[in-house]
Structures are given as C-alpha cells and as structure tokens.
Image (tube, rainbow, N blue to C red; front, side):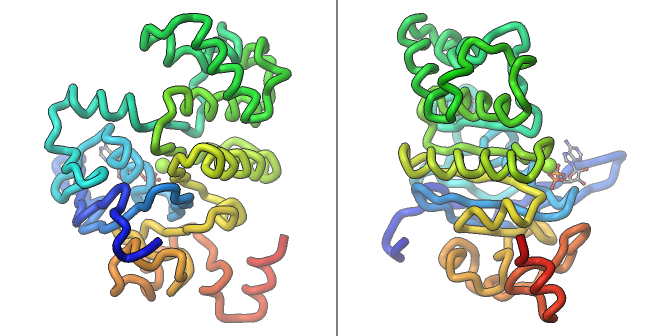
Length: 274
Ligand SMILES: Nc1ncnc2c1ncn2[C@@H]1O[C@H](COP(=O)(O)OP(=O)(O)O)[C@@H](O)[C@H]1O
Ligand SMILES: [Mg+2]
C-alpha cells in the first residue's frame, strides 16, 4: 500500500446508535477505517462490541447514524435504497455464522441460486457454480444436499455462493463460529486463496485469535472504534488514524491478550503456542 493509493472503502467518522427501550446505545463512535483493494482483514472484539454492526454498515444492510462511507470515492449512503440494493447485489458477497443454505437443494443448486434469481441461463449458472465449488475444494460433492455435508463443507458451499456474482468485497461474520479450529482454519485458508486468485477483498469477523492470526491485517472493535489488534502493527498503518496506532483495548471483555500486547513470559507462551 502506498500513500497515493485510493482506498477501496473509506469510512470517515461513522457513528452508530441504537435506541433500545428508550435509551440510546452508542455502538460505534467516530470510527475511521480505510480498506485497500485486495486487503485480507480479520476483525476481532468481545461479544457485543459492534462487530456485526460494522459489517452490516460495510455491507450497506444498515445505515450509520452519522458519518460517511466512500466506495471508490462514491459517498455510498447518498444512494436511494434501490440504488444501494443494486450496489450490494453487484459488489458484495456475504457469509454468516449459519450457512443459510436451502436444505432441499444440492450444493450446485444452492450456489447457482443468485444466478437463477438474476435470470442467468441455467446451463451458464451451473457451469459457474461448478467452477466455484471446485475452487473451494468441493468438486466431488456438487450433488450433495446440505444435510449430506459436514459443517465445514456447508460453509464452503456458502462461500462459493457468496462469490457467484464476482463481488469485489466478501464479508464474513464469524463464518467459523460453529466449526472446530482445524475446520475453521480450512475456511480461512480458502478465503485467503480466493483473495489471491480473484482479488476479492476479504473481511472476516472471528472470535478465535488463532484464526485472526491467519489474516495479514488484524483489527479490534474497542469502545466503538477500530484499533490495531497488536499495538503499533505496521500492517494496520494508514488504515486507522495515526493516534490510535498504539491504543490499548479499553474493553477487553472476554478477549485474551495475545502476541505483541502480552507483557509476561507466561502470556507469550500460552498465546503464541499452537
Ligand atoms: N437492531 C438493534 N437494536 C438495538 N440494539 C442493537 C441492535 N443491533 C445490535 N444492537 C446492540 O449493539 C451492540 C453491538 O451488537 P453487535 O454488533 O451484534 O455486536 P458483536 O457482533 O460484536 O457481538 C450490542 O449491545 C447489541 O445488543
Ligand atoms: Mg456479531
């Protein structure tokens, strides 16, 4: 990344409040973040920190209370809701913790679905779906229904489906939340490989520091802002405001200190091991 490169996404001072039982709940507070084309980003943070809220905003599924988000220079929330829907449909793929596959359809049919809804020819859709299933290592499972696939395989089908329309941005909200570590690491490996082969920008929320470690850029939602997961991490430089580069988490919640932020031998050993 160079200074002169235009961000793919530029989030400027986004605040998101919810009103719950008459009380204002501030979830994101003056959040600034720049994402560059082809970034692979892991977002961490304790439960309730606002990770899903941030992903919803990035995916234009929700609008901020204030602040701006630019996609390649376009102030995206200036669009009408139908303009946003078109943008989302063309540019963004989503993967969630629960795969949301249609149980009565095969893997191939599930992956084809965005094409069929978009009135693509059946044969063309099937061929694109087959290619994607091969990319995620499921070439031998295309006629299996979700119930005939393992949890990791189901999630790989969901990844293939999310990529059907060649999105520029893939957003994954705890896609490995229901998987064991090894299977989760397999999903992360696929996300990285797809990023490298197709250039899709990947943003993945994870609870597991060992999975976060597999992504080059690691940030933390803390007190409504984004800070580096490891203080001063050069990978994060230029993406968040300089004054937050050395921030320490104020709200560690259920998070464990890991890697560079630990200050005792014990912590270092327990966190970096395996
Ligand atoms: N639609 C909503 N209405 C009211 N509060 C919400 C809504 N969505 C999320 N919240 C609250 O915002 C906070 C952040 O939620 P979320 O982004 O889902 O956290 P995370 O994904 O980090 O666990 C939580 O306290 C949650 O209860
Ligand atoms: Mg969440």
